[in-house]
Image 1 (tube, rainbow, N blue to C red):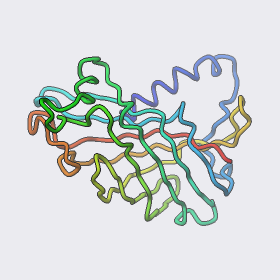
Image 2 (image 1 turned 180 degrees about the horizontal axis):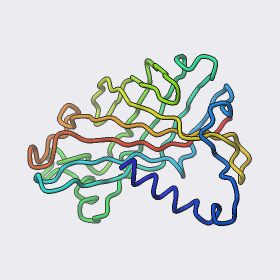
Image 3 (image 1 turned 45 degrees about the vertical axis):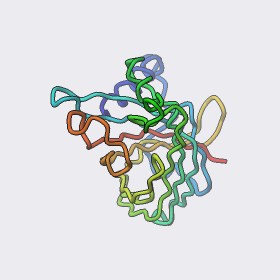
Image 4 (image 1 turned 90 degrees about the vertical axis):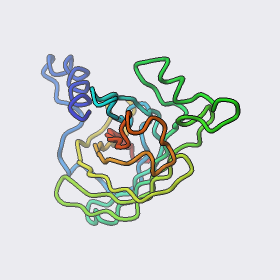
Length: 207
């Protein structure tokens, strides 16, 4: 998933590269300034991946990620992250599967996955351990009404000024793996894997 996101970013940047222009964002930590940042929801997403029947992996997306990052380059371990994921906006390449994820339970029963009006998911960090361009971010993930501790492996991917809105922007990618059964989503086990890989690509804009 991370490779796919990188390829998409490269394709989007190709016209600028072709014109000999330097990209606004660079993997240069000295560009990061202390303060409070908010997500750029139009350019932040979470990809998820499950295995289907042991044949192949299948992917979906959560977009419109909202949240804040408080960061001070002089004390990275004190950084705090609080993001909200609108589960109801989940999307896949199959309209039928997307509908299945959000449909009500049969005859008033429990939905197979999220149901038609799922609550937003939320991740709130409790600990950050930074090392160079990477960090382990531990916190509480609330999904489907269940809260569990999760640790993300995060990587700083770029910083600079957005040429359109002139806001200082910093980007990160992160990944982790959860078991959906621990969050009360057990439909199709084990034919559809319990393990779900989460890959995050997020841009934060300084406020």
